[in-house]
Length: 395
Image (cartoon, rainbow, N blue to C red; front, side, top):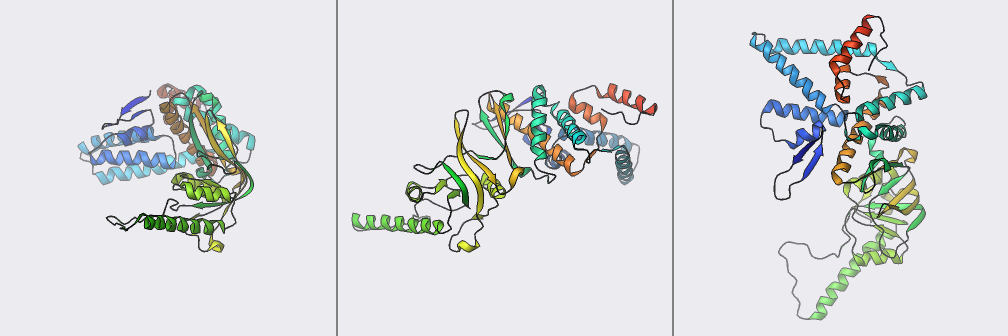
């Protein structure tokens, strides 16, 4: 069941979610032990992606049982020692029960689909889990075992329904190309930068420039324009056809790039620039005096595409190859899109971990609870099946 979280302050944000880590991060906690549980949930979200609620509930149950043992005068170190032995026994049992289909692509893909369905069963996407399970599996299989989720870009666009979401074979940047610049380029050399492309005014706090005539003001403006022109010329010396900057690009340098036939993209956020540098094989630069030391990005095609009513920039044939893809999420409201992104992120993380370690290892009770089933009934049936030597039975 989803919970509505209302933020404090004048501009109170509304979050609708059932993700354990998201809820715990939004709640103010003063108790030191409770803070440890919150941090543990965050680590689970970062490392595994799913099971953030289960790991907190399991740890809280262990603490509750430990409190009873302490009340019986058992020393905490003795309890911790028992937990360590139990952890080792549980790990050995899981390894013994693990099944590895990594050498059978068809069965392994079916395992991945089942894992994705289970992860999505307790989330917003449960009603469309077949669609999103295949979408997540297709995206993760493109990683070819690397597990680098940075190669999977997720974009949220209002409009349509959740089933209109799709996987795009390429990289999408939610920005616009500058005025009077080429809208389509082939065999592109890309310079990715984080530098100021506004007018180089004096930016020392409290400073003033005094002149005795308006002609001197014009001279200062002319000097500023010349300084910007020199900077643009140094950028163009790199032999590029596309310039992407994290910061703003003002009108004058934009005109210079347009005159040179270079596509300029401004205000690409830091996460977007970092990911773009990764997928195109380039590096982020801030100085341009030594072109031979700058590593440019490469891409076979850059063009504008329409998603809904918005224009985006599509990069295809990037240096990272077919590993790169973009998941385009559609939905009626921003809250639905945000929760869909969190749900899909959990599924992608779990699948990426499974591809790294192809053996299926899971705790039946937690899986049943995550999927919204009656864990007590299912685990009882599972134990009965194992007693009948049906060791391959599972959830």
